Image 1 (cartoon, one colour):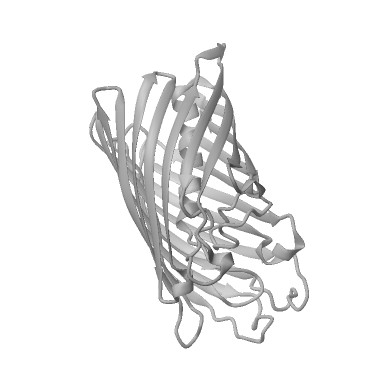
Image 2 (tube, rainbow, N blue to C red):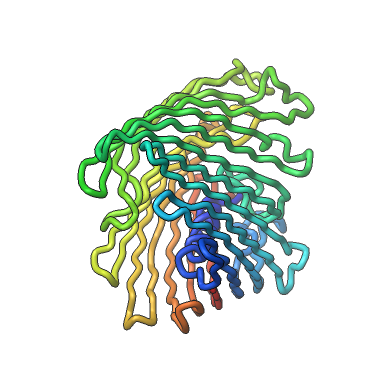
Length: 409
């Protein structure tokens, strides 16, 4: 079955939003500087195409509908260091149960640890690590086994240390580590780790606005091999990249980053397992995500992303992933929040050589939250996703209706 990538980004966004809700809404249970933040969400989803099948080829591409129940517990611990920062840990689970296709039931468990510390001498330390153990069907950013329940773990570590020169300049050093490890040997082409180092400089342009320059170099190493895929022909690669942009502090009317850059990739090996040559490549990249609070009751969000995605260790296939999205959030009569948005993505593959594959994906969503209490929220929502490819077997449409009840104390 062939799947789209948007659902991956959507699920990641939902997890981030839920973590943010835990941090922002909870905190009524306190022990001096420590906050305990429990939460729970119950959600029902009707999905008319759970496998994202085209419905046109064979039984493996059939369109199948189902009702999915999600039980999502969460708990957070936040220790306040006062003006020096904070230390926090948050856990989020997602237990999904299918009404008819119960063989698809899956679980996700996610833990996040953060340290933010500002030393008296101007040194700032920021560490974020996220560990995920899952068997969900949402695949990864490389589109592997989207729609099929697949057991795997991932670990993302981001660390930076900054030194401030007064209130106007900062120099920064970065260290990032990412690991993806699948449970079954059949999925060996997706087992990799990434190590990245970086340095940067930023200057305050306005009271809450910084301009920045960052330089990174790193490598991806595939650590599991099988059959004719070996260390001498896998798709290990190194890269260098620069990023320029503007970032805003929390509390500004604008928040997030305007971030553009350029990346150069070089492969470690000359040819893949089939004897096809690896070719180094370079392209512009983007990781822009901005929210703008036009009024106290209206907010707009813009996201622009571009990256190169290597599909696995076994061959030289990759695709350019470019996406843009916009979302609106409107508070109505202090009790209702209207959310509406859309996303467009295009994936340009380098293969097949004679007629490279190109996928266009469209997504529209709308939802309404009702604030029953300041700790209790009910919500309804609708999502529509469509994928058009120049290879028709990759086409599909998917419609979902959602209803949920969430509490964060």
